[in-house]
Length: 370
Image (tube, rainbow, N blue to C red; front, side, top):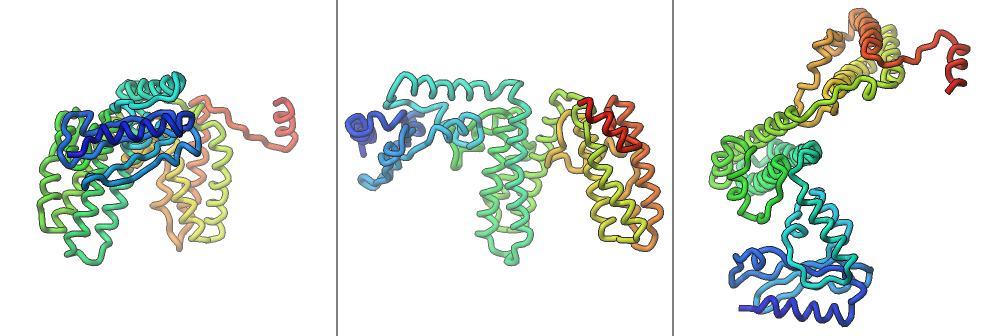
């Protein structure tokens, strides 16, 4: 059995002699640190270079059939790991240091660990939910690939996509629970089992994904797993404290968007359906989103599937899109006028100042006082 620490000693001594000012940190993590190494385990070690020269210490090699990768992590990447912007947070949080260039380097590294220790705080809840949602986007892309793939009987393709989806689901659940995993590659489920927030049928979905020989069953399990996770993200986001603010979110919105309303009125008057189609859909969806943001204190995310339209409907704004008709534009034109009047009254009632002027002279008097 290879003495991996003897290998580490060789590298550290070489660094002390030739890279003492060029490498900030050397550390190791993983199976040897966690007491679960086998005869085939390598030493998971890394270094943080201080200079470009320091990066030259990187080395990949094999000793007696055991592979080693002494790889560099820049300070910027280490900071991303500590901020959960890269997934391997455990490398920074749970490593043992083998070499430190200076007290300043050690203090900088320990500050990253302090940041990780605050991952589960209430102050980080919103940002972690955002990270959970961003990972789901990757799942949806993989699901789309499975749906449009022409060889529906290719089991290997579906299993590969499913492996990517489940890996991202585990990541999303980690963010959602504000934790990081110490192990990956086949050890996610044992860590997820005790999580407070997870899909109720997680084990059932995973068994289908891993053991089924039917591509359609695998696809369906992936879709259900992604949908359940999205619902959990939506519920978590809804549970966070809301900050209602029209004045903050909608200042200047009406003045800018009035241009699109005028464009839609012109399209109706000229009978230009293509313009009406795109402008009406964009205008209605954009107003629905910003109303949601003003009410909730946050913009709707990927998991808010249609829910963000709640306030558009609640306040009685007209459904412009349903009125699109290439033969009769008048109902749509009248609805736009209705929307303009309703939106003005709504914003004024919420204390949003509207910069409307009846003449250039009025605008000049206003602007020159700024």
